[in-house]
Image 1 (tube, one colour):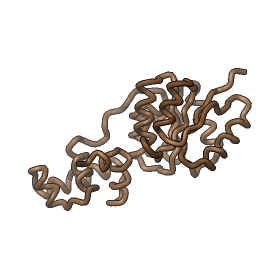
Image 2 (cartoon, rainbow, N blue to C red):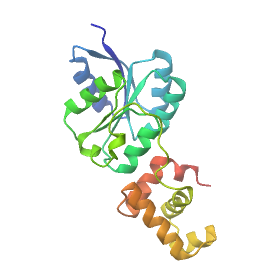
Image 3 (cartoon, rainbow, N blue to C red):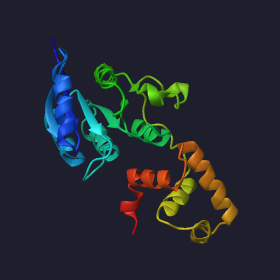
Length: 215
């Protein structure tokens, strides 16, 4: 039997060790490499071309989102499965748009990850049951390409400025629009992304790299 060759990327050594034991116990898969950060994960994928790369979303140097994009560009034959504790629609949409074919929650049963790895190796999409109900039915299966952004550029700019600590009035002044317009953009963006408050907005901004890129 040809085994599914898997790369594991997570900044916690204990987590990687546990996942490696789980995967290597399977008759149809094996871990061929490990990486403690996104940068090393991309390098290992480019060097070894595993069938599946399991990426933690929150990693140092470059996060799982950026690593997924780089892997899609540099090693498109390697399928990416995102592993995260975030069930927010915003994270699911961003990872799928970046090229991931699997999205699994760390708090789910271990069988969920194994199903995602096997599906990815077959060229199929697998989204954790806990998050799949949030997605439009057309996104539940198939290895389709990136989707359109779920928010507009203006809505994204409003959220970015909000995450940086600006008030609605300051955002309105910066963008040259009315405060009411800012409030509408913010409400629409948060509804589309499934964000509940400022803390969620900040976490999403960090995930997107908006705060790192801020001057």
